Length: 196
Image (tube, helix red, strand yellow):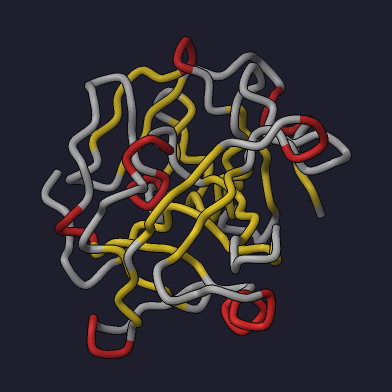
């Protein structure tokens, strides 16, 4: 699927200062943390940003590392020009993102979250609803659980939300150009996972 250059792919969400030299702890939203450093197309944008590059702040990530302990699964970023705790506080809460036309190609078994949002979900031939969000399960400390399937948040025609595990074994057809995802879900899963 050709990506829209006006869309943004979020790589990390900046949480708070993490160190005395302007480092920031960030929620990692890419499976390729090793590719964060050295990107020349990264920008700081507010969450949900849908504007063009003129409204975004270009940044260079000078270093990164993966912490251990309670912050395992997150990333610590050093952004060029951010050298103090006060500097870091001014950008906490922003997203590190790249324009949609600059994202890296994925292998055939992977998909960008931004490509799933807005797709119509079908259980075999039965429409379930539109995918509005993808949630990644985390521990109580906020560490992403890598061995647990992400959850698709699906809005039905009646306004209900349904939680559907995004499990490879359930996926039968993913047609991103047509904005459709067809899955074969276990009997009763849609009714059991409705949130009102």
